[in-house]
Picture 1 (cartoon, rainbow, N blue to C red):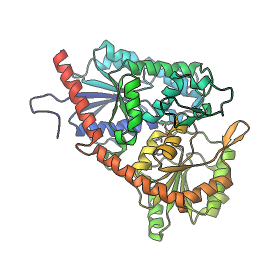
Picture 2 (tube, helix red, strand yellow; picture 1 turned 135 degrees about the horizontal axis):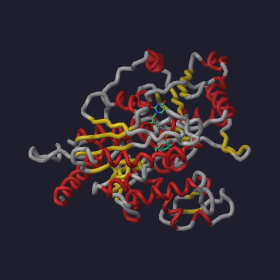
Picture 3 (cartoon, rainbow, N blue to C red; picture 1 turned 90 degrees about the vertical axis):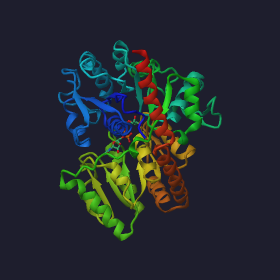
Length: 470
Ligand SMILES: O=c1ccn([C@@H]2O[C@H](COP(=O)(O)OP(=O)(O)O[C@H]3O[C@H](CO)[C@@H](O)[C@H](O)[C@H]3O)[C@@H](O)[C@H]2O)c(=O)[nH]1
């Protein structure tokens, strides 16, 4: 049921995703969700990102506007407008900072649009809060993390727990969640320091301040998944967190694969289904950087595990050598292109996911009832992995060792964990649990479910408030 009566104009929501696949994909799903809730939607992007967005959102019911991506940014090669195309993730910060140069164009364009009910913009586009305030439009910050990761980070920071110990490996208990033990190594650089500082730290703080000056936080999660942590965030920090996901449960119109290749792995999965061989899906998101040594170790672990696997390497893959692909060709497939991950996870024969635990991957996996073998690599993924294994219990975790200051997973250990997930008792337990969690996720997104109601009421609240303010 729509929140609108026939004589009420439709709410008009402006969406502005950050230019990174892990941040744009959920916003594309959100755009469909907003249409289903009776809104008009305008989405801002940049020229190079436009084709991907148009391809993902066929039809003309969403207005797509390009703003020029800032040119001549030192270090950022011309034509790169998405973080997954950066030559190195060390360029993330100059890339993210450069987006602020879009502010005048954004504001000028906003003023030409029909009445805007609210702006939903990514946490990294912190400057959009200034634009929204100037034009008197409420801004909702899109928050791509879980409430769990947010609550744990906040609790550790505000209670000074990160500076307690000399050693980054020394565990401490959280103040508000005393049953949870963390170490500084559960946080990414620079948050693993006793006194975090530096340009990335400053950028994150700017984003946090912009969030606190926003109308609300739109979270890609659902209340039943992490009630304690949602309640904590809403009690201890501002603005209010609205859990309106998982967005990945929103169906985008079916897109016919443009290339024959796009179907190659699906045909292969179909074959494995016919043969009754459960498949482990292996992928590490859109921006993980994996060394060649680690890549060959993964290859050896997978080969020796004897499980059937589909591995998206997203590299030339030459490091693996052609002999590897030849040796495993009966029970393994290596893919070097971009895939439709959701489609793979939803394939019946996929029964495990070796994942870096980017928040979208976690949600897509749990919604597809696929248990996770967690291998966190950066950002808040260590906390997501902890949540997957200890809190919601839908996965197991790989064991990393310290090698030359880096976390490294050895082939033998990977082999054992992969077998445990795909064939062992612990694997069965998490496979059973993930089905319950998936059902709760589906219920939250159904008409009348918690996420559905929260989104409906939020739009109504802002829409009516705008009406009385004007
Ligand atoms: O070949 C590919 C590779 C990725 N994806 C999709 O790309 C997204 C990747 O997102 P995610 O799993 O969250 O990983 P990252 O790209 O690494 O995401 C970044 O953004 C996330 C959301 O803020 C954070 O949780 C992560 O730590 C951060 O690395 C998912 O929707 C995947 O389905 C594909 O469809 N095909």
